[in-house]
Length: 371
View 1: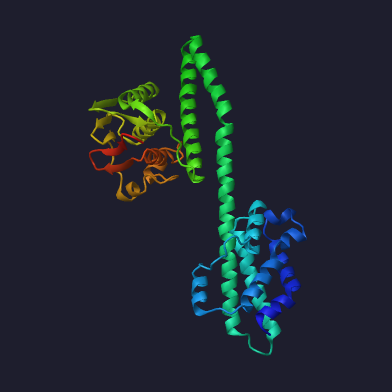
View 2: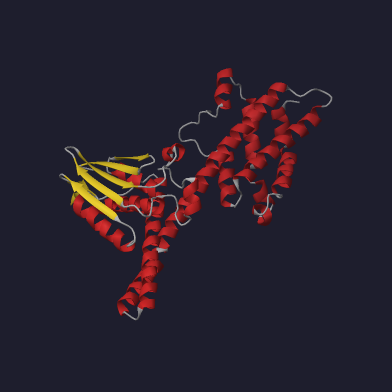
């Protein structure tokens, strides 16, 4: 018996085996009824049977094996895609999703081979069946990952938005306590609250900006005529106040006026300087140099300290990534600061590069005068 005919004839038996395996996928399957466990299994099997019955050229077979099966424009979701969508919303993980297909592949082949006795199963059918299952897995995994990513981005956006209000209350209360002048202990505690609030607000900014980039929206900027000397000077005054034990030096050379988003450039500079404070030598100054050229302005942040190794340097602007020494020394960051810096530079049609040796580490930002 050909495999396509067997699948169509014994769909009920195959789906029962599917359900028997799906119920073991805990905890997601614990509260699902029989209909939900079977989900789109009959439709997936029908699609596989149709695929087996359709003539296929060697070229089409090669394209399918590479995951390049063409899909008609405007075609509806396949049963495998819809199945992945429902499994993602039902709390299944990707390993459980793939395990369902592995179990389906094994049970179909076992039942079919038993039904073929005493004749030998058709080898071409086995190859075509494996290709069809692999195609269904590819469709499911792609849709599953998309759904999970959308859910994650939505959660990040909600967290970033909803934490603003209580954080603002904390900062306002801390400022009020500091203004009471109720003694050194109270003033010191209020100052710690204010610094922590500033740090939390910075993390939320990075989180929300990261979420925008993952949604394909990019960093939002509002360019205007600004004097970078004033913008950078204000940012450094705030950083000096927040980190009174660290020396931050500023040097401005040439014409540094241009059309940029001043607040975003302050965020860029703050992230770079905070990075230097965390990982640079505490007994050496952090040097900020702003230099005006004919077509662009160059902003450099330099710090002394251990050299960054080549592999870390190559991925230093990747999101959610930090060097091993950074992870062991500091656990309070999200690994987004330098990624946000690079995105702000890109939003201004500028660039950033990092250099490091035994003498110093330098982050070099170049900004065209008009973003």
